[in-house]
Amino acid sequence: MMKRWMIGLAALLFVTGVRAEDRSLAVLRQLTSAFTQMSGYSVDFEVQTADGAIPGYYEVNGPNYYMQVNDMEAYGDAQFRYEVNSSKREIVIDLVDLESHNLLNNPTRAFDFVEGEYATELLDETDQMAVIRLTPKSVRSAVGAIDIEVDTTRSMPVAVIYEVDGDRVRIDIRAVSEREASARAFDRSKYPDYEWIDFR
Image (cartoon, rainbow, N blue to C red; front, side, top):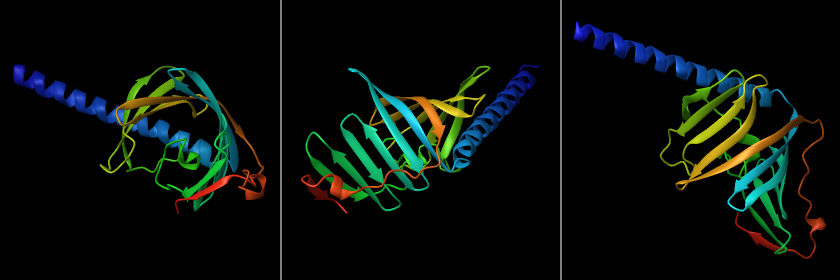
């Protein structure tokens, strides 16, 4: 009798786990689809820190993006990322990290998740909200788990929490708007006397 009960319990837990994984994948697919259906979009966000919230903004059109956080600006395309630091009056150019899903590193892929890259887990769900945990399958990933809070009525992100070197960085998404205009491109003539640091 006890053995049958244990087998039944194990089967129930397995089915429940499969359903939770199916649900997490469904929410993730809807989220990714909502972004890929827009030709371009802009996002207002806040990075939560111990000293308070830091507001930020970015716009995306295809592989191109522009981002502003405080006195920092970043321009990106399919090859290069240009980071402009107004306080230091310097520009750092580097290769774009095409594999990164970190919003602050490569916003074009912040919500563009390819199935198979991550194991998914449904942490919580209410009538209008789901929390999905993504755990990278690659041991070489610089970012650990990613938790995404999703408004399931709109298939839009509410917050993203990154685990980086044991710390957790929370970014609250305040607004997502579709836009037709191209993302602002880097123009070196706007920064004529800035120091140029090239890591390509």
